Length: 195
Image 1: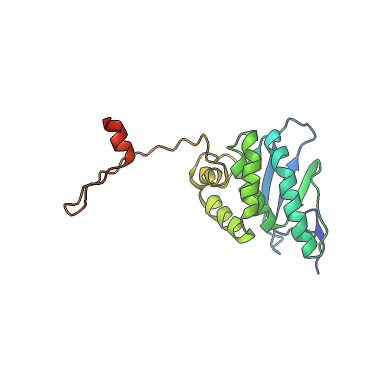
Image 2 (image 1 turned 120 degrees about the vertical axis):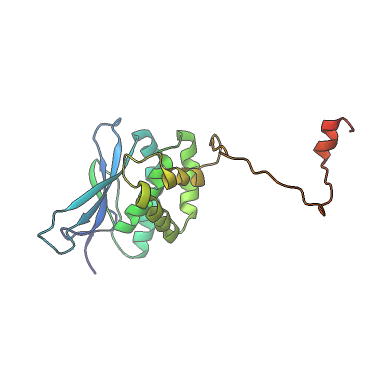
């Protein structure tokens, strides 16, 4: 069995992993990076991409849920557990993907929505989180791409649905079929003053 550090990240140099940078200042944003490593080729340059910058107050709302979930799964595999501490904290590449999904949902949220986002994130299976990560990273996976496609969709999917303003660009026009019977609702009668 290979050695791991922090949240299941490989201890060997140059392996694919994620890491979170947590500044000492309690007001500075927390950032999540994907480090592709060298993959056994020392002639290549290491590639690192910043996936998300998260306001510290939002990070403080989601970090404990992520830590608890990750550590329970690491314990089940008989691996050392991790903790969030100031500096650079490494994660296994799959756990890093899952953390990105949680952080992407939280980056659009208010503080009161974070607990709902965490609950819905926990209800997802790891494979579902990986799928969300893959879809999002392919079109809006960098830190500066916050208002695009799947990045906003993850927030909509994991939040409570309150305050989301999505308007239809075009309203459908429905043609009534000749064979279709006339339908009325109770509301129609109330509006006409018949009730």
